[in-house]
Amino acid sequence: MKIWISITESRGARALVFSATFFFIILDLIVIRPGISWGRPVLEHRPYYTLPSDIKKSDFLFAGSRIPLERHDVAERIEEQINYLLMDRRAAILEILERLSIYGPMIGATLVEEKIPRDLIYLSASLSELSPTSRTKSGGYGWWNLGSTKANNQAWNVSNEWDDRRDPVVSTKLAAGMFNQIRNKNPKFDWLLSIASFVDGADKIDSIMKKNPGFNYWDVVTPPFSESLLPRIVALKIISENRKYFGVEVTEAHPLTFDLIDKIRLNKELSLRTISQWVGATPRALWELNPGVDPGFGAFATSEKRNGGPLFLRTPKGYGQKIKNLLDSEGYTRN
Image 1 (cartoon, one colour):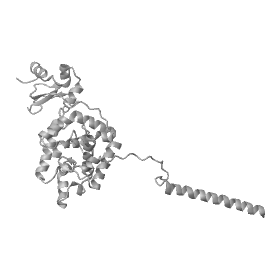
Image 2 (image 1 turned 180 degrees about the vertical axis):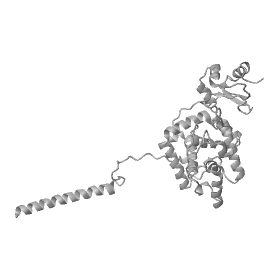
Image 3 (image 1 turned 180 degrees about the horizontal axis):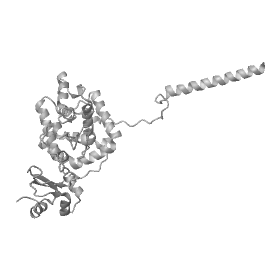
Image 4 (image 1 turned 45 degrees about the horizontal axis):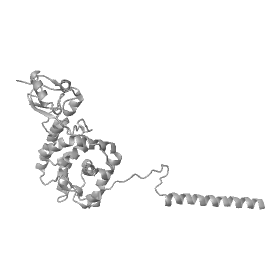
């Protein structure tokens, strides 16, 4: 009997100890470390980037539109995009910023020439990552992700030899023409709503704003693409202008420089390889100056193939006159 009592007491003590231990383990998980999820590894918190304090205190503008950063909801949406770009897309952002230094001056100057705010360079950067061969699932292509000629009812040149959407200047002028159409149709739209119309369709944005008169982009819900894209391009401008604050180090590349030979009428095809031999450059270097040329075709087509229209040629800086003379002497240009 004494032995049985002893065993019972021993088991009871062990059960009490086990229950107390289990209780404190659960308490530790739930109260002390509530972030732990059952069946998942414990992850360290990622850093969170916030807006620079001086931006919040000033009137920050994008394409002439004031961004109301004093509003918590607006600041939060932009900060989310800043963190998305710097955390999830950091490698791409570094490349975009480098390409901005190369192509930004040329595209920016074209925007200003077309009376479009230079800030829209950040739209092109977000849409295409400033790549002439950027392509979307819906058929958008080039620097501005422009669709097919039929889809947009635009008269741009797309052929087996050349595509206007790949050329940085030509495609920017085409995009500017589309923006002018949007703003002529809706003169009360600011540039944010105009951008939303550009990417999601003017009819969709027009319908939303008619149902919400007196409100702006930040006050309404737009289609998913512009809902995320607009805060993203604002975030990209903030990152680009505050690189030191965000710890973004990009080696500044030299802006693209070239000589332009305009209004050329070719009697025969002019290959990039031929030009490269004339100037001592690679065909790839010539294509980067003239990305409208189809890489597979690798040549400027004759004027006859371009319906008799003239073409232009960008050459390495300092070689414009030499190539122009060679075009005449080698029989490429019409007399």
